[in-house]
Length: 232
Image 1 (tube, rainbow, N blue to C red):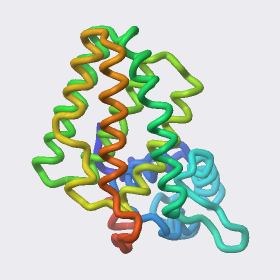
Image 2: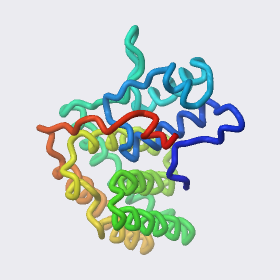
Image 3: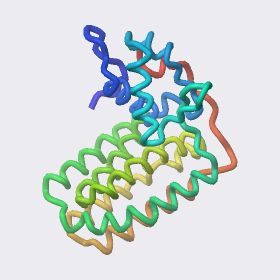
Image 4: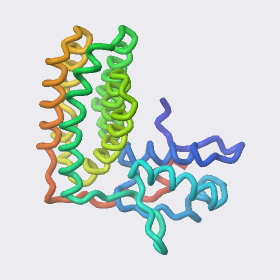
Protein backbone atom coordinates (compact mmCIF):
# COMPACT_ATOMS: atom_id res chain seq x y z
CA UNK A 1 0.00 0.00 0.00
CA UNK A 2 1.41 3.40 -0.95
CA UNK A 3 1.92 5.87 1.83
CA UNK A 4 1.78 9.00 -0.28
CA UNK A 5 -1.49 10.81 -0.88
CA UNK A 6 -0.29 12.18 -4.20
CA UNK A 7 -1.86 11.04 -7.44
CA UNK A 8 -0.80 10.54 -11.03
CA UNK A 9 -0.81 14.03 -12.53
CA UNK A 10 -0.97 12.78 -16.13
CA UNK A 11 -4.70 12.20 -15.90
CA UNK A 12 -7.30 14.11 -13.85
CA UNK A 13 -8.02 12.56 -10.47
CA UNK A 14 -11.48 11.12 -9.86
CA UNK A 15 -13.53 12.01 -6.81
CA UNK A 16 -12.96 8.47 -5.46
CA UNK A 17 -9.18 8.85 -5.79
CA UNK A 18 -9.24 12.21 -4.03
CA UNK A 19 -11.44 10.82 -1.25
CA UNK A 20 -9.03 7.90 -0.81
CA UNK A 21 -6.00 10.20 -0.71
CA UNK A 22 -7.62 12.53 1.83
CA UNK A 23 -8.81 9.60 3.95
CA UNK A 24 -5.29 8.17 4.09
CA UNK A 25 -3.80 11.53 5.08
CA UNK A 26 -6.40 11.96 7.83
CA UNK A 27 -5.92 8.42 9.16
CA UNK A 28 -2.15 8.87 9.21
CA UNK A 29 -2.57 12.15 11.12
CA UNK A 30 -1.04 14.30 8.40
CA UNK A 31 -4.21 16.43 8.29
CA UNK A 32 -5.44 17.51 11.72
CA UNK A 33 -9.03 17.38 12.97
CA UNK A 34 -10.67 20.74 12.40
CA UNK A 35 -8.63 21.54 9.27
CA UNK A 36 -10.60 23.41 6.60
CA UNK A 37 -10.76 21.50 3.33
CA UNK A 38 -11.28 24.29 0.85
CA UNK A 39 -12.72 23.24 -2.48
CA UNK A 40 -10.61 25.78 -4.38
CA UNK A 41 -7.39 24.75 -2.64
CA UNK A 42 -8.01 21.04 -3.17
CA UNK A 43 -9.05 21.67 -6.77
CA UNK A 44 -5.74 23.44 -7.35
CA UNK A 45 -3.75 20.71 -5.60
CA UNK A 46 -5.32 17.92 -7.65
CA UNK A 47 -6.00 19.85 -10.85
CA UNK A 48 -9.73 19.18 -10.86
CA UNK A 49 -12.97 21.15 -10.68
CA UNK A 50 -14.76 22.08 -7.48
CA UNK A 51 -17.52 19.66 -8.48
CA UNK A 52 -15.11 16.71 -8.35
CA UNK A 53 -13.72 17.89 -5.00
CA UNK A 54 -17.22 18.41 -3.60
CA UNK A 55 -18.16 14.84 -4.50
CA UNK A 56 -15.06 13.52 -2.72
CA UNK A 57 -15.83 15.53 0.40
CA UNK A 58 -19.43 14.34 0.40
CA UNK A 59 -18.29 10.71 0.35
CA UNK A 60 -16.00 11.36 3.34
CA UNK A 61 -18.86 13.00 5.21
CA UNK A 62 -20.84 9.76 4.94
CA UNK A 63 -18.25 7.96 7.09
CA UNK A 64 -17.96 10.99 9.40
CA UNK A 65 -14.35 11.83 8.56
CA UNK A 66 -15.48 15.21 7.22
CA UNK A 67 -18.13 17.66 8.42
CA UNK A 68 -19.80 19.96 5.88
CA UNK A 69 -21.28 23.19 7.23
CA UNK A 70 -23.58 25.36 5.18
CA UNK A 71 -21.97 28.66 4.16
CA UNK A 72 -18.71 27.64 5.87
CA UNK A 73 -17.45 24.68 3.86
CA UNK A 74 -15.91 21.33 4.72
CA UNK A 75 -13.67 20.53 7.67
CA UNK A 76 -11.96 17.43 8.98
CA UNK A 77 -14.27 16.22 11.75
CA UNK A 78 -13.31 17.17 15.31
CA UNK A 79 -15.04 14.81 17.78
CA UNK A 80 -15.87 16.19 21.23
CA UNK A 81 -14.85 14.35 24.44
CA UNK A 82 -18.44 13.10 24.72
CA UNK A 83 -18.35 11.75 21.16
CA UNK A 84 -14.97 10.16 21.86
CA UNK A 85 -16.37 8.27 24.82
CA UNK A 86 -19.40 7.13 22.81
CA UNK A 87 -17.24 5.87 19.93
CA UNK A 88 -15.03 3.74 22.13
CA UNK A 89 -17.96 2.42 24.13
CA UNK A 90 -19.59 1.39 20.85
CA UNK A 91 -16.39 -0.35 19.75
CA UNK A 92 -16.17 -2.14 23.09
CA UNK A 93 -19.70 -3.47 22.52
CA UNK A 94 -19.36 -4.48 18.85
CA UNK A 95 -15.81 -5.65 18.24
CA UNK A 96 -15.38 -8.30 20.96
CA UNK A 97 -18.40 -10.22 19.71
CA UNK A 98 -17.19 -9.79 16.12
CA UNK A 99 -13.80 -11.22 17.10
CA UNK A 100 -15.56 -14.27 18.59
CA UNK A 101 -17.38 -14.83 15.29
CA UNK A 102 -14.20 -14.26 13.26
CA UNK A 103 -12.54 -17.12 15.13
CA UNK A 104 -15.11 -19.48 13.57
CA UNK A 105 -14.34 -18.41 10.01
CA UNK A 106 -10.66 -17.40 9.89
CA UNK A 107 -8.70 -19.24 7.20
CA UNK A 108 -4.94 -19.67 6.87
CA UNK A 109 -4.95 -16.88 4.29
CA UNK A 110 -6.81 -14.60 6.72
CA UNK A 111 -4.28 -15.30 9.47
CA UNK A 112 -1.38 -14.63 7.10
CA UNK A 113 -2.93 -11.30 6.09
CA UNK A 114 -3.37 -10.24 9.73
CA UNK A 115 0.22 -11.20 10.48
CA UNK A 116 1.40 -9.02 7.58
CA UNK A 117 -0.59 -6.13 9.03
CA UNK A 118 1.16 -6.60 12.37
CA UNK A 119 4.58 -6.74 10.72
CA UNK A 120 3.93 -3.53 8.80
CA UNK A 121 2.58 -1.87 11.94
CA UNK A 122 5.74 -2.71 13.88
CA UNK A 123 7.94 -1.45 11.04
CA UNK A 124 6.09 1.88 11.26
CA UNK A 125 6.50 1.96 15.04
CA UNK A 126 10.22 1.24 14.78
CA UNK A 127 10.50 4.13 12.32
CA UNK A 128 8.58 6.40 14.77
CA UNK A 129 5.88 6.83 12.11
CA UNK A 130 3.07 6.82 14.66
CA UNK A 131 0.35 8.01 12.30
CA UNK A 132 1.13 5.21 9.87
CA UNK A 133 1.13 2.65 12.69
CA UNK A 134 -2.28 3.79 13.86
CA UNK A 135 -3.66 3.65 10.32
CA UNK A 136 -2.45 0.05 9.98
CA UNK A 137 -3.89 -0.79 13.39
CA UNK A 138 -7.27 0.43 12.20
CA UNK A 139 -7.03 -1.75 9.09
CA UNK A 140 -6.26 -4.74 11.32
CA UNK A 141 -9.52 -4.21 13.21
CA UNK A 142 -11.50 -3.82 10.00
CA UNK A 143 -10.01 -7.05 8.61
CA UNK A 144 -11.29 -8.95 11.66
CA UNK A 145 -14.78 -7.61 10.98
CA UNK A 146 -14.44 -8.73 7.35
CA UNK A 147 -13.36 -12.21 8.43
CA UNK A 148 -16.45 -12.45 10.65
CA UNK A 149 -18.55 -12.09 7.46
CA UNK A 150 -20.89 -9.55 9.06
CA UNK A 151 -21.21 -6.84 6.42
CA UNK A 152 -23.61 -4.58 8.35
CA UNK A 153 -21.51 -4.65 11.51
CA UNK A 154 -18.30 -4.33 9.47
CA UNK A 155 -19.62 -1.07 7.98
CA UNK A 156 -20.35 0.24 11.48
CA UNK A 157 -16.88 -0.74 12.67
CA UNK A 158 -15.28 0.97 9.66
CA UNK A 159 -16.98 4.24 10.62
CA UNK A 160 -16.05 3.80 14.30
CA UNK A 161 -12.42 3.10 13.41
CA UNK A 162 -12.34 6.22 11.24
CA UNK A 163 -13.73 8.28 14.11
CA UNK A 164 -11.20 6.67 16.45
CA UNK A 165 -8.36 7.93 14.27
CA UNK A 166 -9.63 11.49 14.71
CA UNK A 167 -10.11 10.99 18.44
CA UNK A 168 -6.57 9.69 18.91
CA UNK A 169 -5.20 12.62 16.90
CA UNK A 170 -6.92 14.99 19.32
CA UNK A 171 -6.61 13.27 22.66
CA UNK A 172 -3.82 10.71 22.60
CA UNK A 173 -0.93 10.37 24.96
CA UNK A 174 1.32 9.57 22.05
CA UNK A 175 3.17 6.36 22.93
CA UNK A 176 0.61 4.96 25.34
CA UNK A 177 -2.30 5.52 22.94
CA UNK A 178 -0.75 3.20 20.38
CA UNK A 179 -1.97 -0.36 20.42
CA UNK A 180 0.04 -2.37 22.93
CA UNK A 181 2.80 -4.08 20.97
CA UNK A 182 1.74 -7.68 21.59
CA UNK A 183 -2.05 -7.25 21.79
CA UNK A 184 -2.59 -7.96 18.10
CA UNK A 185 -0.30 -11.00 18.20
CA UNK A 186 -2.40 -12.52 21.00
CA UNK A 187 -5.58 -11.84 19.06
CA UNK A 188 -4.24 -13.53 15.93
CA UNK A 189 -3.20 -16.60 17.94
CA UNK A 190 -6.72 -16.91 19.35
CA UNK A 191 -8.24 -16.53 15.89
CA UNK A 192 -5.85 -19.11 14.42
CA UNK A 193 -6.80 -21.57 17.16
CA UNK A 194 -10.51 -20.97 16.61
CA UNK A 195 -10.82 -19.89 20.25
CA UNK A 196 -13.75 -17.51 20.06
CA UNK A 197 -14.10 -16.93 23.79
CA UNK A 198 -10.46 -15.92 24.12
CA UNK A 199 -10.59 -13.73 21.01
CA UNK A 200 -13.63 -11.95 22.44
CA UNK A 201 -11.96 -11.29 25.80
CA UNK A 202 -8.67 -10.19 24.23
CA UNK A 203 -10.45 -7.74 21.94
CA UNK A 204 -12.45 -6.27 24.82
CA UNK A 205 -9.35 -5.83 26.97
CA UNK A 206 -7.41 -4.36 24.05
CA UNK A 207 -10.06 -1.70 23.34
CA UNK A 208 -10.50 -0.80 27.01
CA UNK A 209 -6.73 -0.29 27.29
CA UNK A 210 -6.72 1.97 24.22
CA UNK A 211 -9.69 3.95 25.51
CA UNK A 212 -8.13 4.44 28.94
CA UNK A 213 -4.90 5.73 27.36
CA UNK A 214 -6.66 8.81 25.98
CA UNK A 215 -6.66 12.12 27.83
CA UNK A 216 -10.00 13.72 27.02
CA UNK A 217 -8.97 16.97 28.72
CA UNK A 218 -6.44 17.93 26.06
CA UNK A 219 -6.45 18.51 22.34
CA UNK A 220 -3.52 18.46 19.92
CA UNK A 221 -3.02 21.49 17.66
CA UNK A 222 -2.94 21.72 13.86
CA UNK A 223 -0.27 19.76 11.98
CA UNK A 224 0.52 21.81 8.85
CA UNK A 225 -0.62 22.81 5.39
CA UNK A 226 -2.73 20.69 3.06
CA UNK A 227 -0.06 20.69 0.34
CA UNK A 228 2.54 19.39 2.78
CA UNK A 229 0.15 16.81 4.20
CA UNK A 230 -0.74 15.51 0.76
CA UNK A 231 2.91 15.17 -0.30
CA UNK A 232 2.43 17.37 -3.35
